[in-house]
Image (cartoon, rainbow, N blue to C red; front, side):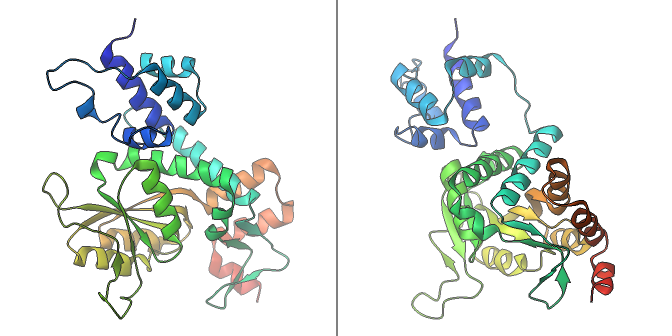
Length: 308
């Protein structure tokens, strides 16, 4: 027989496992978003309030879970944060989704020309992913789980999407975590309120402390573009200590240096190295292409010099 505390603990764990906050899980299940709030788990007189069987049925249907899975979550003690193995599995799922949706491309014979004019055998377009519902759902579930584990849902007051590619992912993650969202322009729009930040961004959170914002973008190369968004948010009076991207190049030392100088911890689902590993394991590309891509990732400058 399960106790009142165990049942609610199981629902909290199910929410976390599916990439939701408790209120996000309630909303996903077609319930009032406040249904699973901790303040509602006991009556004003201190009597325990139990989730109804109808609510549990809706939760299981919405998350495509079974009662057995819920019982397992009630009985086990999950780790306080994601294990390295779980993060590796997330990275591989994300890389596989990006390859299968052709959001990531490898081509050594006809290298891609980048905005800088330089060439390379790899190309990433995270914007393309928004058109693929199943893959997008997987990445957003894992992204929400990563943020909840590494930052803590209770430490996130608002998600801020960077114009333009970060906006859809900020919206999707905000919905998962049931958090407010804003988006940040590269420059103020030049008329009306002259706003650079769109949406409501309070300087204080519900606890009366400085609002904690997490910057959301699609990808990061060297991190230089993050400066504009982070400075705009800080100028608005909020704290920005964390940023999230679906894809981090992971091949430029400048990226880590820029994040350190900004005082921001970067969280990413996957990198070029993860993508290369998945491509090798699943034989997505021929051996010549994989060798060329690995050479590029190890030394982009040398590769470009050899392929002028």
